[in-house]
View 1 (cartoon, rainbow, N blue to C red):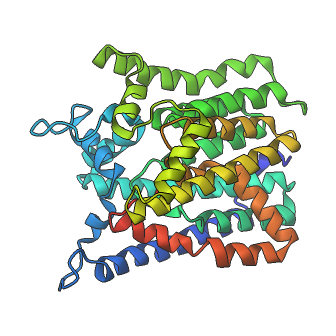
View 2 (view 1 turned 90 degrees about the vertical axis):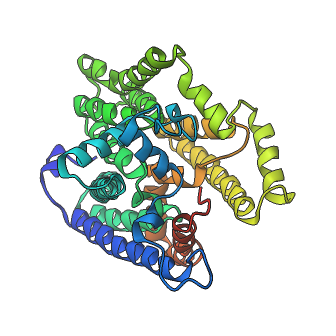
Length: 385
């Protein structure tokens, strides 16, 4: 493991990550602009769809609603879905930026994702560099990891006014801090992650497992209480919902009412997902995405097996808890974009491509093009996971 001094230096791997982040932002923003012209709602349209309208899709609408009116929704219409399903960290950030600058909530969300996504990409590159032991090898792995991460099929959610970029701007540095033995920083960063999405709770469990299994001198029992941060953040939101609704499980019940995430055993959920994908129960766009959901779950299971084989217990727990949550609902849902959170996937895949160039060629030709597909799906109002 590289020494703590790396956190005080801007390494070549960091510069490569920033460069790739900026270049892929140009590509992403260009694709969205092209989509506004080429995929206007009316085939006979003479003007493109408004650029910001292209970004105001799906959960973005709900985050903006919370930021503007709170969890009660627009007082004229009420909430479109149970808004308690969305943690407060991201909407509160939008509200703060709007209050300070006067920009619209969607612009605020895009700005947050732009900055936070860059931070997350650099932190991921540093995780990779540390795994390679630093030096030139670390820089190579850092750059390759950033490249594969930013060309992931679901990478559009790093740019959209969604929680992924902001969550990862806390989660990746938290993991990096834990790997370097800075448990206080890991816990404090975990508070931010825990306020943004339920996955922050899973990150908290992973940080505790990492602490308990550390055998390299990083573990200091006096610092263990710092790791309560993610749990306290999640409990704080649940306590707020209890005070507001009288229900300690308001978040879970909102998930069930709004997204049909009632408990099913994984094999039952798989059967329902497969039926929706293959039995013509859904429109073609949703059916195609259900196939993508199954593929993402399969990748997650393979990744967990690889992590367990290499005794990477904490990372296996982090991804395993997510897969359990995803595969015990009515159907598999939102798994493809959650692969962005699986940092071991990107570092392991990057290391593999450095050993075997054919793997890189396969990724760039078979998987990376779907980044364009998902971008156009999302920004034309179609379901993209």
